[in-house]
Amino acid sequence: MSAISACRYCLFWILALPLYTCQGVPVICFYSKDCILPCSYNPGTDVVIHWQIGAKVVHSFYNGNDQLKQQEEQYKYRTSLFKDELQKGNASLLLRNLQIDDEQSYHCYVGTFEGSYDTYIELKVASPVTYVQIETNETENTEEIECRSSDIYPAPSVTWSYPTNESYKEFTNSSTDVNKLYSVVSKLTKEGMKKNTNVHNYSCKIKTWQSQWETTLTRQEQQIEEGQEWNVSCMLPNVGPQNCKLAWKTSNTNTVTATFEKCKQPSNTSEIPNNILLKDDHFHVPKVTETDNGTYTCSCTYGEVTKVCQIKLIVIPGEANNSTPLITVVIAVAVVVVVVLLAVVLYCRKKNKKNQSEHKNGAESYESTPLKSNSDDQKTNGQKSK
Ligand SMILES: *[C@@H]1O[C@H](CO)[C@@H](O)[C@H](O)[C@H]1NC(C)=O
Ligand SMILES: *[C@@H]1O[C@H](CO)[C@@H](O)[C@H](O)[C@H]1NC(C)=O
Ligand SMILES: *[C@@H]1O[C@H](CO)[C@@H](O)[C@H](O)[C@H]1NC(C)=O
Ligand SMILES: *[C@@H]1O[C@H](CO)[C@@H](O)[C@H](O)[C@H]1NC(C)=O
Ligand SMILES: *[C@@H]1O[C@H](CO)[C@@H](O)[C@H](O)[C@H]1NC(C)=O
Ligand SMILES: *[C@@H]1O[C@H](CO)[C@@H](O)[C@H](O)[C@H]1NC(C)=O
Ligand SMILES: *[C@@H]1O[C@H](CO)[C@@H](O)[C@H](O)[C@H]1NC(C)=O
Ligand SMILES: *[C@@H]1O[C@H](CO)[C@@H](O)[C@H](O)[C@H]1NC(C)=O
Image (tube, rainbow, N blue to C red; front, side):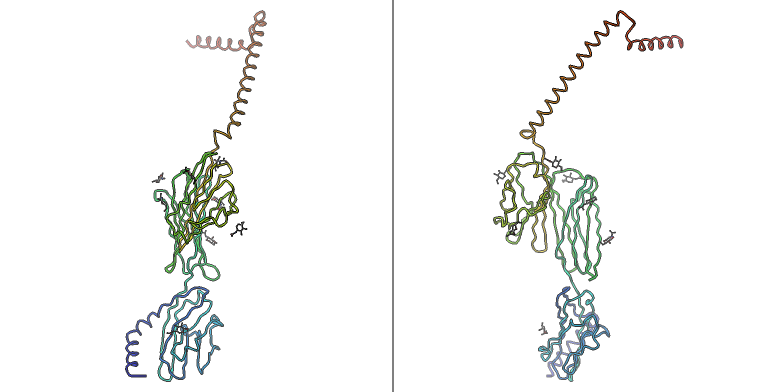
C-alpha cells in the first residue's frame, strides 16, 4: 500500500467515520427481489468477512470459504458473496428474495493481514404502489367512491381530491398481511345524492415516501331520449396517445366492449354491438334504445397514473315513436271509462225520475226525510237557546 493511498484512506475514514457509524449508507431494495449490500476494502491476504446485524451473523467468510454455522435462520440459503470480486476488494453481499424483516442496520467487517475495514449499511425495503383501483357505488341517497391498493411497504397514505363545494366524508382503513405488506381501502361518501348532469372530478392518490399511484375519476350523468343519437367521449385529459390502452366497459354486461389504443383502430371489436360505432376514444350510438341504459366506463393507464371516465346514461322513454301505442291504449281506456260512466249516470237519472214520480203519490222520498227532520231539529234547538 503506497503512502499516498494509505493517507487518502485515512483521510476518508476520518471524514466519513462519524457519518457512517451514526447512520449507515442508505440502500433501498425492493421486496421479494435480490439486493446487493455494498462493502469495499483494500485487497489483502487472509481475508475475514463478517456481515452482521448487531451480534447476529448474516454471513461469514474466512479460511477461503463461507462459514455459515452461526448464520441466523432468517438468512439461510439467501446470502452469498461475489467470490470473483473478493480479490478486487469487493465484499458486497447478495441477499435474495428480500423480506420486510430484512430492513435492518448491517455491519460489514473485513479484516486482512494488512488492516481492517468497517462499513455500515442502512437497508430500506420498498414495495411500491403499483395500482389504485377505484369503484363507485350509488344507492338511492348515498354516493360512495372507494379506492384500494395492496402489497405496499412502508405504510401508505391516501389523499383524495373531490369537488370542494360538496360535503364528502373520508374513511381510510389499512391493514397488513402475513408478509407485513400493507393493504389500504379508502371510502369517500356523500349523503343526499342529487341527480345532476355536471362533470365531477375525483382523484385518489396512494403514496409512500418512495412511490405513488394516482387514479382519477371523471363522472357524468347524461340523459338521452330514446331514439336519439348519442356521442360518447372518454372525457380524459390529454394522455400520451401511444402508451394509453383504452377499454370501454358497460355495467349491463360487465364485459369489455372494446379495447384499443388511442388514435388507432379498435384491436378487438368482436364484442361491440352492431349499433355502436367506435372511433378513437369515441362511441357513436345512432339510435339509443332502452337496453343502452347503464354505466359506461373507459380507463387508461400509463406511468403511475390511471384515468377513469364514467358516464351514466339514463335513457328517457321516448314520446314520438315507441310510446304512441301506450298513449293510444291510455286514450282508449279513458274513452271506454268515460262512456261507461256516462251510461251509468244517465241510467241512474232515469231511474231517479221514475222513482220520484212513483213517490209523488205516496210518502216523501226516503232520502229527504232524515234531512228535513234534521234541519227542523236545528231550527227548534236554535229557537230554544234564543
Ligand atoms: C461488487 O460486485 C458486485 C457484483 O458483481 C457489483 O454489483 C458491485 O458494483 C461491486 N462493487 C464494487 C465497489 O465494485
Ligand atoms: C353499495 O352500498 C350499499 C349501501 O351502503 C351496500 O349495502 C352495498 O353492499 C354496496 N354495494 C357494493 C357492490 O359495494
Ligand atoms: C358545486 O359547484 C358546481 C359548479 O361550480 C355546481 O354546479 C354545483 O351545484 C355545486 N354543488 C353544491 C352542492 O353546491
Ligand atoms: C379494517 O380492515 C380490516 C381488514 O380488512 C378489518 O378486519 C377491520 O375490521 C377494518 N376496520 C374497520 C374499522 O373497518
Ligand atoms: C355524433 O357523431 C357523428 C359521427 O361521428 C356526427 O356525424 C354527429 O354530428 C355527432 N353528433 C353530435 C350531436 O355531436
Ligand atoms: C374535470 O377534469 C377534466 C379533465 O381533466 C377537465 O377538463 C374538467 O375541466 C374538470 N372539470 C371540473 C368541474 O373540474
Ligand atoms: C377478442 O375478444 C374475444 C371474445 O372475448 C376473445 O376470445 C379474443 O381472444 C379477443 N382477441 C384479442 C386479440 O384480444
Ligand atoms: C333508465 O334508468 C333510469 C334510472 O336508472 C330510469 O329512470 C329510466 O326509466 C330507464 N330508462 C329505460 C328506457 O328503461
